[in-house]
Length: 218
Image (cartoon, rainbow, N blue to C red; front, side):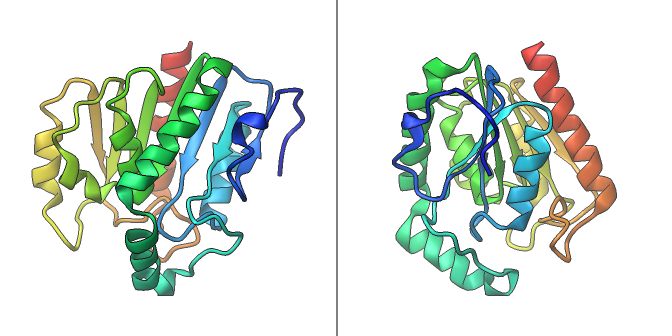
């Protein structure tokens, strides 16, 4: 699914099954997927961002063409926790960002669920990325000691089944570099292939994300 480009791609050769769009842009958006892998939702979001003429990279942490169905949530989470984990994922993504840093003026991370938490963990390095957008990164609650070195926008649902989301939001609001938006929707509201999809919230979040990016790079 590569776009046309003369850009050298050797910097990503060690990633199997990486989804890429190249538009000869000086902006690279790195999309970090959920526990399910690079499914149709993630592919759709990558195409959406590429349509704004950004270069888009989506590293596949599962390292396979396959992805988990939403009905296999427990298996997908167990696979991530046992075979990958946040520490390994953070190191892998930071290594990728370091390799592409000199090729782009702006590097932006957009993460979903565990991908949002991985993006959050990368925010403590001021040299590897410039902007972070995270959708319902519920595990950020385990890493509130992180101090972002770049602007961050976080989208949260109205509630999370496993913890009090309002307490986390209150903690995050104390940091001026973090913009928090809460929507009257459930975890997964941006995914049109999920039964949690909320069109109004998804469109509002997309609009805010694009405005956040455009305001920063222009």
